Image (cartoon, rainbow, N blue to C red; front, side, top):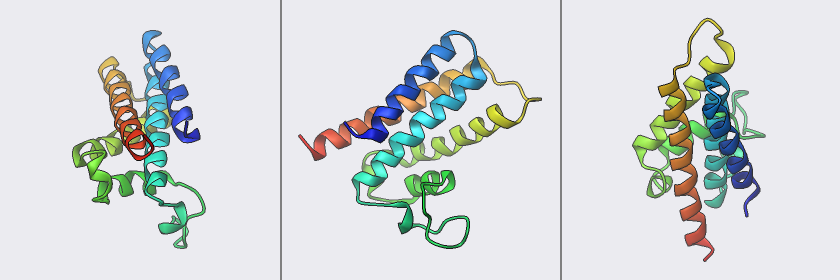
Length: 137
């Protein structure tokens, strides 16, 4: 199995456990990272690498930056066969919720936000797995 996808599964399981314990802030964070790593696996399955994109420094990226992943998944027409544009845009929402969860202590994270984030990660992982299986039957 792909290492990025393995990590995505591990983080998704963590998100599910945290959701069940009503630890919504942490569930949102882990769910986002599960989706993020699945998206990295998807990008790399198309032969893409961080250096294909301009990083925050203005030079070719040396790693998968969050902004690169969320933008590339939303913009690349090849990837839309795996993740619809709507799902790709929801990844941006999920990233914004992760920022709220990790850095904005004064904001409350609802059970619905946490559940939605976990469900989105599940959906993304399922679609990426289907794509990878089709590539390597």
